[in-house]
Image (tube, rainbow, N blue to C red; front, side, top):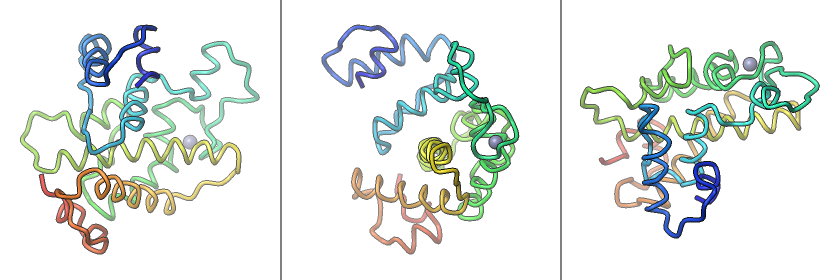
Length: 202
Ligand SMILES: [Zn+2]
């Protein structure tokens, strides 16, 4: 929480609840960007999503724009384009392959977005009633979290596996649901893999 506070106000706050309200009020409302504070997702992941949606992550393009001197601005996943947030998470063919793998698992993952904003509009900001929305939100946030960790691994270890990344997203979400809200999630891993919405009770 302190990370978010420093970004927004530079002042210490005493409670998480109050701080979240400040983030919503001072950061999201003016931009018309609803906050995804689904409490099944760890706080650090929600903050990461918030930063990604506002293009505040230290992608190579953002670092260079802030004056950092890097060897290149190339995406570490495809090694073929500049690493902006929209490219890394959405446009990159390697990132698309991860979403394709996830979509084979659960076919409600947005596949045709061109920007991070569009991805979240397609995921959770429609005006239509959608029983799958909580799960869409969780998967979307896990996708951004695990993709960023995978991107960092790709920079230092020069490897990135789309199928392995999709699998890690599945296991990570399952561990969140199990540990944070066991009453709303059945205990069956097999059911989760076969049909995630069948084990998630809204
Ligand atoms: Zn790329």
